[in-house]
Image 1 (cartoon, rainbow, N blue to C red):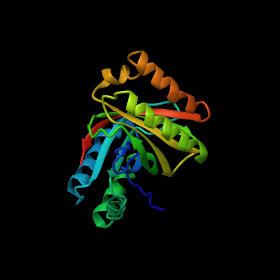
Image 2: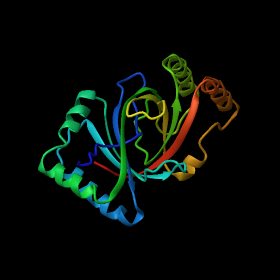
Image 3: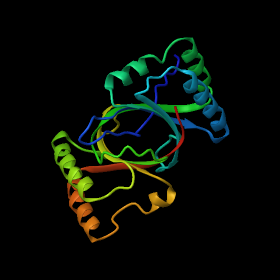
Image 4: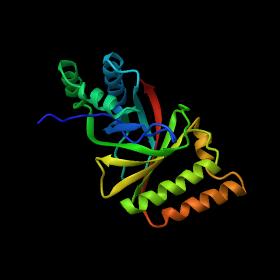
Length: 228
């Protein structure tokens, strides 16, 4: 049976006090010897496939991760419109798509797909190339308190880039359901993420209390290769 690829993982987001951002992700496991070939196939297809202006496609490497994470790359689709996102995903078909998938199957060892939406963010539209996701296992009754606490955090702490909390709606594994996602301008900024003074430390400590009741699952960091 033909393997099915869809597109892009955890790089995520909405605009708090504005519209949500919906996302559709695929994680790809690629051997190092095949990376340039896969990058070429992705670039050739998404550079030529028609795309609405309110849909973004991004190709990234998974640069930092735990030992259990197999993915080495991500393709991602995001939009403020769930309908536009669904329509674009549904447009990935036909002869060109079949040929692209056939070629990708020769070089991608495994893949997994997930989808979701932001619930609250700091409202930043800054497009930074490095993004980090923290994934948690939480029940619905825990989610509301997490969102409320996160809303207080983003008001009291100034994040340089984008930061948001959202829900993994489809493609969850082992109860993973909630994420926090932040972006950085460069690796140095990523290294220095966190409280910078007493007020920041107090804000983080208050938010961290809500995480005591949920299970932390994993974190990974992606580096943007190209937007489409």
